[in-house]
Image: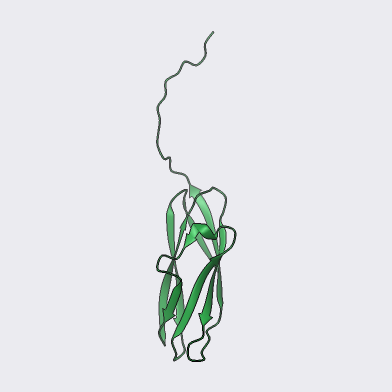
Length: 116
């Protein structure tokens, strides 16, 4: 699954990933961001995700654009063994696109067009 982050240059975009636990045991995942632009993505609530039995939860993934080029990374959720129960390893592709640029500041300058 691909999660797309679109926004302005230097803006922070937050997306949610919903995880479900249909089993009768608690699942614990270790979340890791890997890839070329993994440093531009973050998990503000930490890297450990605990999902109670028969429930669902959402984790936030934040992206702050630093460049005009698209950023790419992968969110890996690797389960920890709890009472002999392993969850499936999950992988999400993270991609960004800068849609517009807001000026940081506007400067007014006066100058002659040319000099002889």
